[in-house]
Image (cartoon, rainbow, N blue to C red):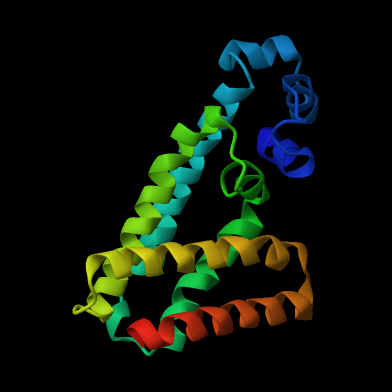
Length: 182
């Protein structure tokens, strides 16, 4: 989608509806037939990404008994699809996976974050059923933030460097999670 590309290239704030229309090869008036403003476009992207992330969560978190996997395999089973999603959807990071999310997009991204946090929390609880809920919640939050922090580096890198950075991410997550849920 042209809007996702424009947001990925220039960021949300710097992208105008005129830029999006030009990238899509349509007139701004045609764009306004479907979207009232840039926020509407971003919300439509959020819905699209939510559907794709739901598929990703199904692939990453369901199927095999993840709680029973060795920690390294568990981390790889989750981070691999996340990297692929971010590579395929470069506009996602520019819009929804940033620390300074514009207030107008906070509501659009809240369900995405809540669903991911819920899945990671449930997985950690299954791996370490004796952990207090506040520790599980904090551990899930920190693990997600570690992935979010590394993802721009991984996506920007290519070839061997990307593979090396993915390895670093898995090592960091293993080092953090092993004492808690290993």
